[in-house]
Image (cartoon, rainbow, N blue to C red; front, side, top):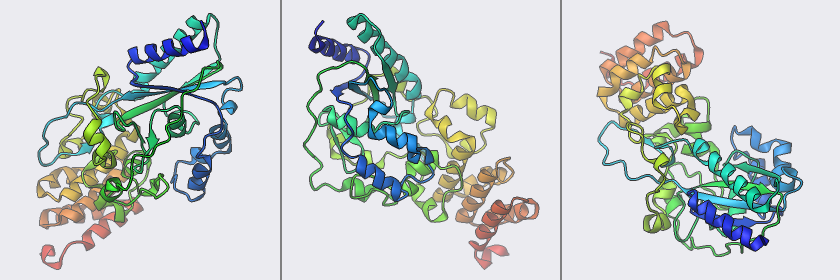
Length: 383
């Protein structure tokens, strides 16, 4: 088969496997690598130190560092937006929609391997390859834009003009020369700034990057320690990730449709969990509930940290029993954020719980959270 025929057949097979977006680009250095370098230099990658590792930077600068035989890169996008989870009620948390169903790190790899097998069958010989779905040292959105899949929006997401931005990206680095697609050059964001206005922490930067130190998705998933006190109120009731900058995007509001991929359908109890119930999840219950879910990325301690903060932001006294129990959690991180939440709710019952915890808490960081929460109570509440 001619390479043009192989490319056409490959695109058809990719769509059959559930990838709505398919494009091919060259392994040339990505056009925005200098912006990535500046982003690292400014510390906007927060604690994600692996992004700044020298080997990682070299490979992102030149995909041939990943696969010396690389002659083309297949870039793919799979829609993940689930059907609506229904109307929520009070006392619930929010989870980013990509995490409502199965973990895409489990869903996409078998299909990427199937595409590699398909290519090798068409070529009639082994083809050097590497494939990734946000796990490799590639500037994915740069490659996707150059492969014609869309443009990098002000919200930092890749936006496709027919489908919006609710897509998961994946790449197959190939030792096979396929004709590249035309890059997507228009910028259809125009003068719109809805995503910038919607971001509660102002983390979106003018050069279409973001400061991860202030991003709710980073803070609730990748950040391992206590969330800075000044950012806790902005968390609202987001307990894993955040969709705000995508929800307000006109391209999503007009063009995004629920994914047909059954794996991404909402798992019962995951899309809008009851916060007080989540806070009492044991390690075993957490692992059972989120088996095969992206939420496991935050680990139990990070997830319950987020839940405690959300309860504090809701300031509902009905959450006091769950928060009081969390003051005895084996994880200091959970105990500390539970103390903060009780300080936000206030009232005599919360005060008594904090005072009791202050008598027994031995961890200095948790004790500091307890003392700060106690100071948040008015003198009247002390009687």
